[in-house]
Image 1 (tube, rainbow, N blue to C red):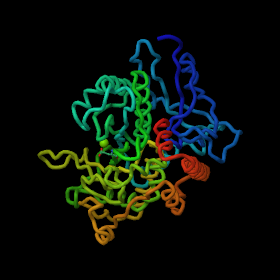
Image 2 (cartoon, rainbow, N blue to C red; image 1 turned 90 degrees about the horizontal axis):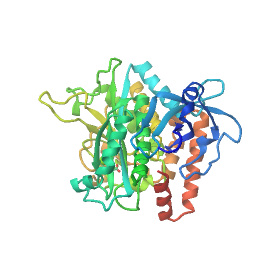
Image 3 (cartoon, rainbow, N blue to C red; image 1 turned 135 degrees about the vertical axis):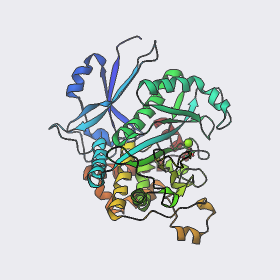
Length: 437
Ligand code: GLU
Ligand code: MG
């Protein structure tokens, strides 16, 4: 390669991106010890690169301190610099976690789950994206033609993910023209969120180096198939044994897992403000997009916000290690750390109150009558970011999960995004999110 290798230290930010600083790899050992200085107000920069009002001004300091386990170095391009990045904690100058460190926010939720219920969370993020440049032309959706047309990209991507230790499982054509999905193995708690963030950065990095352009924006056009980030969740005991499945229960939902899911279901309108947090997210969440836009719990129901994935049935029935719950409304405008943290907080409430497993909805929510929807407790998720924010702001319990600075900063950031979008044509809004993600 020409030039000097650089390393990037970044934190997961409220816009679902990784922001931070680059420096010469020659200084890596020292930087791993000391971290690198950074600015608190960066947590108030939105996806369109504008600064929202926030509790942080021009003042103050915070340190990006790298997690050696959240590291990727991919050196597959003889002529080009390697991809080299660490996900970092935000650390205050006195050495304590910074008030708006999102890894710490997630870590605390996971600690509560472990301390109160002796449970650990396994999670995997299924991430969809479009190749909007670089493909000769898209192939028919889900086809081997579409697979072949992106194979040069896919082959390098899988090698890159493997080199980064992200355990790739599938690279596959999706339902839109030029749309693909990438899946990696599940990981525990914090590592799962880190993995989701790093996978997105690697997809973009590989695309850039290989002459493609990848975007995870929730929608690339007003109509069509969106890009989802489906979060697969399952619970384990402290020895790593899966505990979500109980063959004696309806649909195999173990009582504790059912309470966890019920907790999430109850808070869905508010959770949408964090999981589907951009104006374009709501083009995707419309019915008929398989985006899980209905607050319903279903087995293999792609319109339900939470779907049971029982996995493939073997001779002994369900394999409890595969059995999981898929949260479908999320997209890549959300921070994976925030998404997972709010899911854990909501699930924890369900556990604390011993909520019963929600009723199973076996039909497409659009096909139900109003009375049937009412009987099953099925609602539509908020239909706009404004509605979702209002739901979150009205929910005192949700507010209590956040530190005051993060709550203030998040609300201000999202209101700022909404105001900016209101000034633009729908096309221009879609284009700016396509560029950002
Ligand atoms: N693209 C859909 C979404 O926006 C999901 C399609 C699928 O089921 O994988 O969530
Ligand atoms: Mg998919």
